[in-house]
Image 1: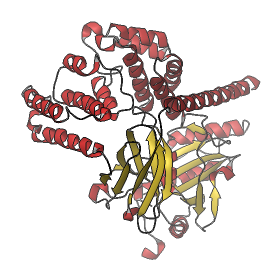
Image 2: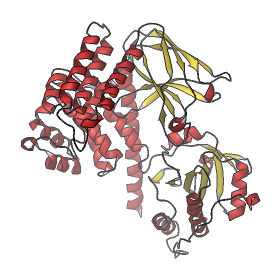
Image 3: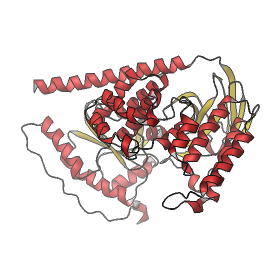
Image 4: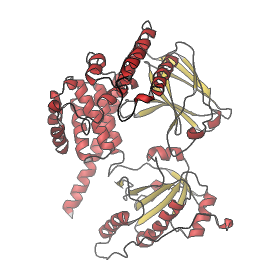
Length: 508
């Protein structure tokens, strides 16, 4: 028992040390990248449909993990207006965010921008359960960077739509000369433009376009990558790089004479960074050290996100990359990847949040520290949600003395919570999140209902946690055995069938 406790505390210490190290490194790398002369920049506009909601200006920390940080935020006024003034040091792509509504804005230092957000319609309707990108009207006081990039996108996307007949199981060779004419046209159109940011954007946007239109990889590499260094601060570069090296370590491999799949698999399984790095040297497309390191960072993040291998191995390799990468920007990508992958790893602290119970009383989740916690996040009382709640009721009867159970809605009002709990005799804690948009972001809730199982310190035990049923019952049983080593389990879960449609008591 003593050895088990020591191992547990050692793991917790190692996790805290890792998170602290990554956080400090990220701060240092971001700070080091800020070395330009800042100019005051204005962003203003109207988003009447979202009045009363919080609007944020966020800066991307990298374009491979898409981690971002808040620069400015405010509440949209009752007339829909908003206005920001802040310093910008270099041209770049920024994220304007209203809850799950997102818009992109290319910002040049010292410029002034007016944005008008129309009310989303149809598929773009405001939905807390998913991220939505919208295209607001953008007016620039000087320069036409947003207009130029929008026109480039329209031209390339319209070409792909107009020539969709060439796409079947593969891409016909007949599309290549047509695509070449578009590339020539755009290069000629912007040949005299002096905006270096726009030139770099166009360069790598055309690289992605040629990959989409069946141009050979060697030609694309020689034309767009071979004599160019990574443009880390450009979304068009990350897109082109992603297209070129798509699933390079796990699915799409180089030509047979350059294959390194089995060696890479072994390196990842054994957390051998040197082997992973050196096995790529045989690939002519990875002759550059910076490209090799960037591929390792981006692919490891994808592998970790999709849980294709042991997360511990992925984190160890990213850790090595943070310490060994040539470019600070690549080190930052690896550090961001580590932060995002460990956000929900076992032992990471769950985000605190406030909720109102069925009687309207407000609490914070942190108040329940000292008990194991099982949280169900849901939106509405749907038949499927009610069926899973009926299983939670069984779990509550068997494990409720040791495990506090919560059903937290992102939209239902307390009165409706009370009506449903009374109707179905649900006897655990129901609540409505007081800041649902923040909860959705903090817990990365992209589909509801979703479940999280936390220990007594409100740290994740397993993410994602199983829904009510036999799999979560096994975890609950393990908790019971640890808390009551000399007592038998009270029962084994037997899920009932629930087919009744949800309805309020007064609907009957």
